[in-house]
Length: 157
Image (cartoon, rainbow, N blue to C red; front, top):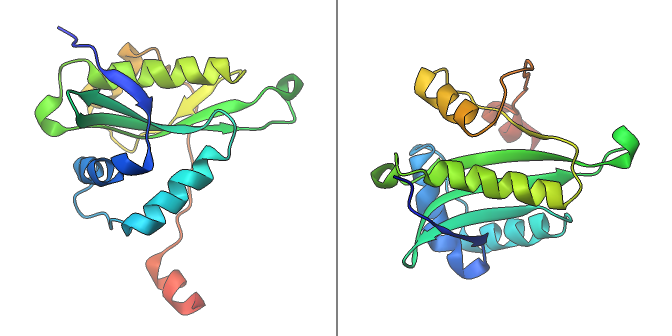
């Protein structure tokens, strides 16, 4: 049974818990220093409609996703939304928190006058794909990406 979360935009004071939650996405990922994380949160807030949404149970951050609203020159000038960094604490999975986070992000995107909301996953696990489908997302496009390699970053300095 789904338990209701308190969902709101992350504040700088939430960053220690949020950064700890991100370890559930990729334990090997580099955690930014708190001052840099606060700067990035502030920068994201400058994009109208964009937010790092957090889901709270009691006073603990147990789920999160990021919505970026991107201005657009097609579709009558309607923006589009991109959801990234969808995560639920491993101990809290299976309770509907992730779906609530996605629903909140989509609602926020519609309020920001987006014409569509997209997300990508690197997972090929049937359970992950079924989760996104059950949240209303359709697997309909082919995604491509290019990543900046660490070696390139070091030689550029």
